[in-house]
Structure formats: C-alpha cells, structure tokens
Figure 1 (cartoon, one colour):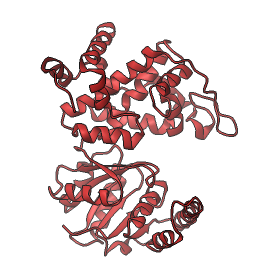
Figure 2 (cartoon, rainbow, N blue to C red):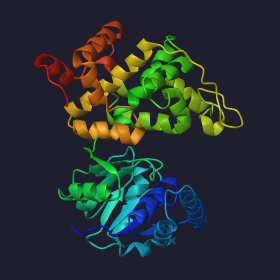
Figure 3 (tube, rainbow, N blue to C red):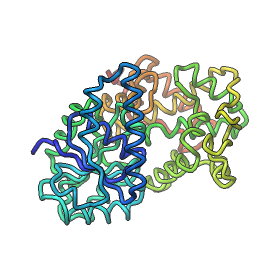
Figure 4 (cartoon, helix red, strand yellow):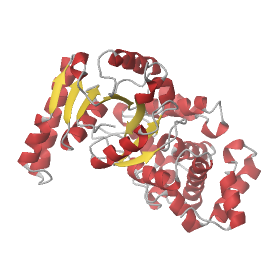
Length: 384
C-alpha cells in the first residue's frame, strides 16, 4: 500500500482546515477543496494568523511555518484531487451528502486512492456502500480542533481492505497523532463511551438531587477540566442532542442512550449554549458564567460509575481494545485518566455494587451492568 504523501481534503471549514494544517505540518502536499471561494480565503487568513502566533510564542520556527503554508493548495475544483493518495472529506454530517461526494470522487481519483470520511457518528460501512470500490473507504475521525487534539479514531468499514486499517494507523502516528482502531459501531469510542457524562448528569438534575453548578463542581473535583453542563453549553445543545439521538437510534432505541427531554427543550427554545448566550448557564458579553458550586461526592461517583460501565461494555462488545478506549478518552476528550485504568484502581466489585444498587432502585435497563464486569469480579481480573 503506497505512502500517503499527497492529501486531498474536501471542506475548508474548521475541521477540514484543521486537518489540512496537520497534514501540511507533517510534510504532506495538501490540496484543499471547497465550493466556496470565501471559505478558502477565510481558511488561508485564519491559518496565516495561527501560524504567526505560533512563531511569536516560539512554538514554530519561521522556516517550519513557511514550509507548512507552502504545502497547501486551495481550489474549488474537485478535479484537482486526481493525483492524491487519499482524500479526507470533512463536509456536512449527512449520509446522503457523503455518499454523493464519494461517488463523484470515484470519477476523479485513481484506483489506488483511499477515500476517508471524518464522520463522527454515521456508519462508515453505509458511506462505503455507495462506492464502486468500497474496499478503499475508511473512517478517520479527527477531533476539534484537529491541530491540538491528539486522537484520531480509525474506523474500517465492513468492506475495507484488511491492510488499510494498519496503514492508516501508521500514517496517523507519523502525523503526530494517537490513533485508536475502532469497530464501525454506533458512536465509535468517544461518542459512545462519553454519553453518560452528559445523560447521567441531566438525569441527576432532573431528579432534583443536585444543581447544575454542584454537578459541574463535583466532576471538576474528580479531575475533569469541565463539568458536563459547561461542556454541553460549549459544544452546543443542537450538536450534542443530535449526536445522542443518532446513537440512540443506531442502537435500536436502547434506553441507555435515550436523549433527554430537558435538552430537547433547550434546543426548542434556541438556548443552544455559549454561542447563543444561554444554555444551562446564562452567559455575559464576555462569554462568562457563574461557576460557583458545591462538591457532592456521590454525584461525581455516580456519573463516573456509568462512564466506567460504558467503557467496559465497549470492550465486551469488541468495539475496541482497553488500550484504545483509554487512549481515546484521554486524547479525544481530555479525561483525567483512562476510564478502564481508573476502574482497575477503584475495583470492579465496587462499580458492580453501585450499578446493582441503581438498577434495583430504578428498575431501568440504563443501569444494567456489563457482563464483562461481573466476569472480572468472579475471576478477580483487571483490565491492565
């Protein structure tokens, strides 16, 4: 399989532009395509300003910046991708749009060119199904902002050539990333395992057990950089609710992933978070909000227990290895520890006991314990 030296990227928005920077700084020739000349000009301006700041802070030399900038060619013509080794799409999160793009790309690129989707929640197998050569399709899910976030989820489709996954892993490592190999399953690693960080926090709020401020303070006390409500406000409730809904639907309505009425109401009110000045918090003109909250140990532990159970269940269903899952959660969403290593420290028996207590109280499937955790307690084993 040939080395990826000429990278095509479709979509010059925040994500596509960030991936272009990563590839260019790795020494690749990059052809960035967008139908909008305005988007291309905006990317050029933003990237130049970003690079100037890196030079001013001593994080890049002027030579490094000049080389990276010269590696990028911008165009609105899809035909410019004819000589690329791989094309990474970073367009709208729509199955129809991605399939249509890949069909068009197959008329332009060579037979050996890899087609990669940056989807965060759609089936890579579904994207590949529209192609004449689905064996060359793979998922490369970068995290925003791509130049700063270390994780790339590498997701082979059901049809993907068996050599392509390892090749993509090696390439992402050479780009300075921490790749995690993931089965093509709903939410991949991060958007699956992280669901309880948001959903269980909202559940606790809806029960009246703790306030928004107290829940956020409790999670920060465990080492998380942001509490769940702060993070949902930052992500945007339209985006967060849509991902939750997608994962829930993909799991055939499994109650563990059920979206929240509370968050749906925020979306209906257009209280989408920081970008609208109102979400769970009200924001002032500087984007600040009240962060005063009381640390409640039981609250943080309950959310953490649900996260650990979700991570263990991802191993049970062979979504990814324990190492890949812990890498993903630390490098993709900045968790203070890998959830499975953290579970080892706490002890599987303690996690199982709390899950059983929650399940007994509520009688809901959302609190069912992963069979793997029960097996580990019986056998006295650990993840690491």
